[in-house]
Each structure stands twice: as C-alpha cells, then as structure tokens.
Length: 109
Image (cartoon, rainbow, N blue to C red; front, side, top):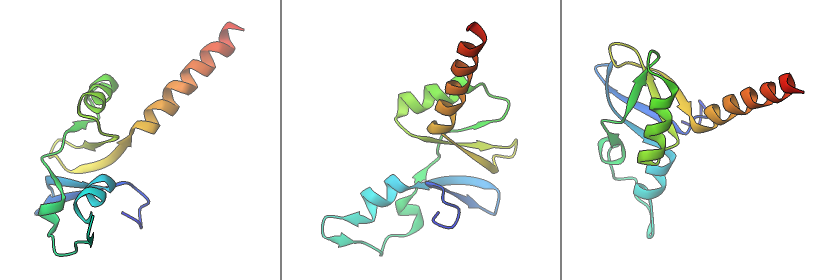
C-alpha cells in the first residue's frame, strides 16, 4: 500500500479470484489497537471479505450509491473474471463532477 500510495490493497486467491481488500481503516481498527500494535494477525483476519466491486460497464451512480450507503471511500473496479484492475476513490468522482460544473458555468457565461 505504501509503495503504490493507495489507501487500499486487493487480496486475491490463485492470482485472480478477489477474496478481500485491506484498507487504511482496517489497519487503524484491527492492527493498531489500544495496547499498541498487534502484528500477530494474518491477512485474512485484517481484510474486509467479499468487498463490493464494480465493472467498467457499471454506471457511476452505482459506485456513488454504494459508497454512500455502506460508508466507504474506495471501490474496486474489476474485469469480467473479478480480477482487480483499478481503485476508484471518492475524491476522483468529486473532482470529475467539479470539472463538469466548472465547464458548465463557463459555457453559461
């Protein structure tokens, strides 16, 4: 996660089957505990199992709805075989809509 500078890491089985994700929030709540740092936990104990994901063919509204409903900031974009190909962050959507609004205001002026 630190090498890629992403707040999320995909956990897969056999190199393709998506099993879960590990987020910065998982580390904060499950590894960094009140008594210090618990390094004895395995990846499967830390990860969020069966995370929501979407394909490129899904609409943006689907991602935004899931992010709002389930209170997360990232969603994995997967291919037809459920192999993770991209991480979409909430900030990406906000920047996208900001540019649309900005260009709309310029066109109206």
